[in-house]
Image (cartoon, rainbow, N blue to C red; front, side):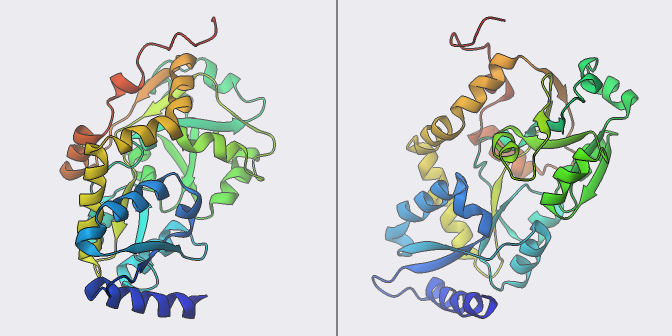
Amino acid sequence: MRLFCSWLLTLSCLALQHPAVGAATPIIAADYLETSPHRELIEYALKVTEAEYGPATLTFSGEMVQGRAEQLLKDGKLLHLVVFAPSPERERDLLPVYFPLSQGLLGYRLCIINSGQQYKFDAIQNLQDWQKADLSIGQGTHWPDVAILRHNNLTVVTNPLYSLLFEMVRQQRFDCFARSVDELVRDLQNEHASGLVAEQQLLLHYPQLSMIFVSKSFPQLAERLQKGLERAHAEGMVQRHFRRHYGDIVNRLRCERRRVLQLENPNLSEASRKALQRFAYTSEQLLAAPAKACPPQ
């Protein structure tokens, strides 16, 4: 697989610099994007910029953790792009495409907890209550959320392997596996999630976005994706995509009327903040009064 990807990336590099007429350039993306809603936006951005940059097609890497994907992008080998939350290091070492692919939903966090542990959260009314209770949160070692949560004086337990975090919360190594609202349903359907449930009362929120990062070896690709996503937003495609993929999730979140614990994100760069302000829905828009379709309380 590695030799194949290396050969493919070499061809891609040459094609990005000298595109052949009619030939589609293979763009190697991180494996998890193959089944992600983000794939549709990326492919659309490539399509609407085809006249300027030539045809391109997404291919996908073998399975890898975030730290490995980040290193491959830094090396400029085996991988063209990933989707991450931003961090100062990632924005320094990689080429960011400043566009919130899920409209800022990444910063709205729900807890996956052990069945029977809801009582730990029922009395929590605000961030100070959480801190006093010293409830701990599980996260991936390389996730930027770790620094954000610790900045807000929350206890964080980490592991580099996503699958092991399910077992750790089940064994009560921490209390809350914090996941974005668009990840929660998928995670609870995961084979590792037996005996785990969604916490019912709280919503953690900090400004955050899912965005594309490109290897510095391919600046034209980053430029192309930025243009393509901005065009998709201007055409209304991004808004339709959001309603189709996340509309039910957001409506359910509104209906649940959770207590919102607001956190600071000290690592959000000015460029990332501006991207959220320009392209994403505000908290007021996302958490507006429940829809008429909400069941009676």
